[in-house]
Length: 201
Image 1: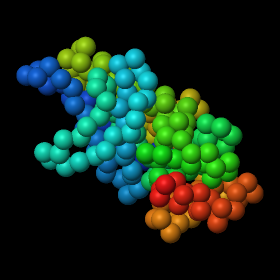
Image 2 (image 1 turned 30 degrees about the horizontal axis):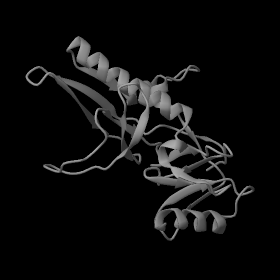
Image 3 (image 1 turned 45 degrees about the vertical axis):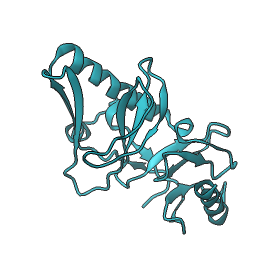
Image 4 (image 1 turned 90 degrees about the horizontal axis):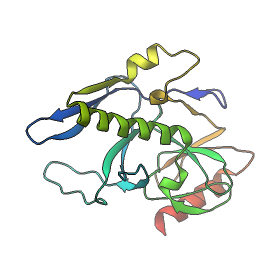
């Protein structure tokens, strides 16, 4: 594994399904490759503002989230991690602890996880919302085959399958979260203590 190499998007397939009976749209995500895949849910206001991460639940589980808003999904890279950018020092790192609160392993600022979303992730979420609206307006199902997009990438990479970037130090800390940071900017022990502080405060 090389430092700073691109980590490809996890891929999969996203289907936006129109239900004529209820005049509503649902989404379905399938994943059939041997790569890691992590999915988190967020809610977006009708004006396009990211409001919060959403909890997930099983059948019959009522998930509270801000209303009115649109539930959307964000998919990880092939290592199951999400890139994050600190809203204060603008440093990049990857982690699987993206929802709720996040803490920067470089400068230590703690803020809501949505403040750490990258430009690529925001673009992906915008396209996700746009597909929901298109499905509702056209009353036709929409399918986005991310695996096919990945197989046919050119220099103009589509926003649906953006890559993340490996850093220098990837480690699973004692709190069970995985992070990937620049070794020269923050020692592993420092980053681990900050992440533990985030999770238990």
